Length: 620
Image (cartoon, rainbow, N blue to C red; front, top):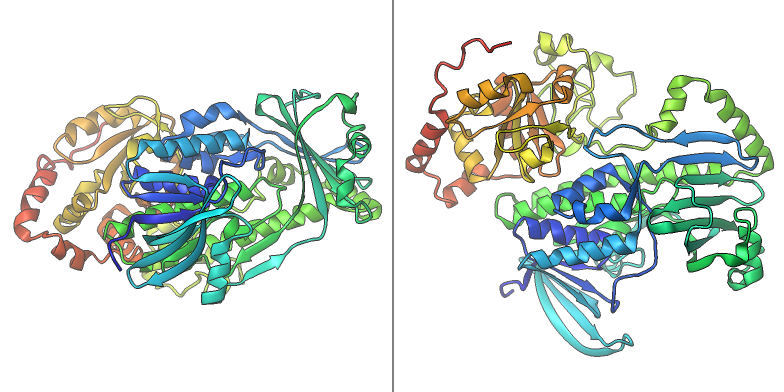
């Protein structure tokens, strides 16, 4: 195949495809987004934005432009038919740097995502382009594209070449169908027959800012206060109510009457009938073709996680494609996209399907539900389970680009570094539970740790910090958007071998030393000749994090997940194990890049200059 026209061709200009293109562009890769429509979709769809997605948008350099279209602290109340609040969802944490829940206006956010592509020379969005065929080769993909006019009539055909193709064109994905036909990928799950009517109005006739999930046996509903004066209602339609009925003013008035004083006076800007789906593709990648967002999975709207799950896909996939396209990692790295994302998506679908069942309870089951909720709400831990959104599955990768904390085995990670703390049957065979040597876990840092949960495979926290060049900023601004090796109370350059440091420089990895803010000036002076950035822990959050996790050194992936965590003395081993887990063929690629001993020595000498004598006592 000839040289590709583009690194990554993305099918579909929805939020997932546009976010992926922005992340690739920010990391220097070319990306072309093809969209069949003549414009972006202009009606509201997704309405819930969480802190994980915001962190990604900030990494893409777009959060400041998008924030104005959001409302933070989007409180959700689950109420029954009598107005009794059964549960309140109002998480207060900012562990990832932002308020956990936001409401937002998707069309306006999509516009900013599209405009963001103009910042990069290698990214482009083309409307009126429909993908009609894919032909995969050993070194790329030929993409047959139909060019459409304003009436969506074909006026031309062209063939584009790409190193990789990502289908992000939604639930009716052409790409998923192609993978099914050529690679046997199936779309598993359920599509309940229940229909819902969505009604969006401007000049909010209620004016309250929160969200109500109405589990009313007479007719379940949702009422959502959104930014810019928009109100959304969702009403369940019964089986004997034809879809055509929703277009009659009398029926809409009947639905709205319990919610507004004057239903006839509302200004409707959009209404649509939809059906909830709970489905997921059996694989998100085959060869050089991948799926993301609704093309890979569909889920009900109850927890507002459809949009966010798609952004998680883009976040996971963007750095892996970048590493492979740079020649740093082999294509085996892309296999971890499915292994890491599929399990979390499936768990999120299950939770959403269960929430939908609770919403649609009839009179008898509803009465039982209400009694149970009333009783459980008096238990603080149970109440917090709902208010803090703890029932939402958090992504945790037990396979993929991870290293087990106790054994430093690449590719897998147990949930705990204390095997004795795991209950029998807590982990199924093949899901991370392995035999460990007594020596691996008998060290006092493991046995004495106040916590037992390994941080590996989880997203790293993002408190506010200070550095020599930036005061009171979020941590990601100090660590950047690529790999980070970080140590608490240590310069990681001192913990690595000469060869490690040469690889760190060659791969553009950032070294970071976390210190209490009271010791930052001392550390900056001591490590002035080191390539390490000293980060001051101004809030104590970083100290608390390391205090209960039996580690003093972490490897942070470009998506800010913890790839490895170890004791300081194990830093080099943890780093090398991470490279193995990420399919970084270091020896071969270093040789090809010309990293010879003569080139390494000056780098290593500079890294170690001034490090002698740093074993002196650190001031309190």
